[in-house]
Length: 146
Image 1 (cartoon, one colour):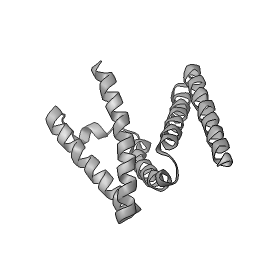
Image 2 (cartoon, rainbow, N blue to C red):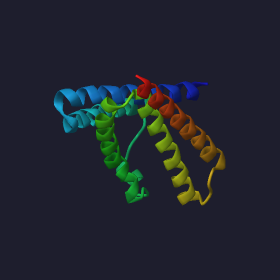
Image 3 (cartoon, one colour):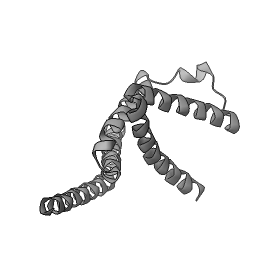
Image 4 (cartoon, helix red, strand yellow):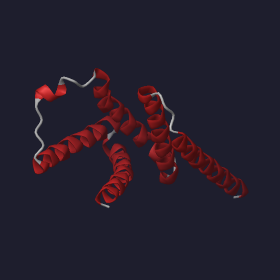
């Protein structure tokens, strides 16, 4: 139950973070808001490492492949893109697009690493895409009438 609550909290934090980053980028700029996003994340991670008592040594970094470090670079791009896209679209749609992209990226990574395609995730993702498409179509019809 604890892990379910933590995962739900993580999802809420993602949405709230996106909205706050967008507001901050409107005030001080995209690059600056991304910088403060990562500075805050680094400080929060450091505090959590201290609270949890996790030890980090440079020798533990030896076995990590180089592409694993690209996550930070990709994260900066995602934060900047979210700050650009969020004011132009309803937060609901942005959240669904990000969820769908994460799901299908995870499927692609599973396929590349394990050589297996998780059919249940693909079907679930397709249902989300179909529902999103239907909702966009309904919104389009409503805006056309107005």
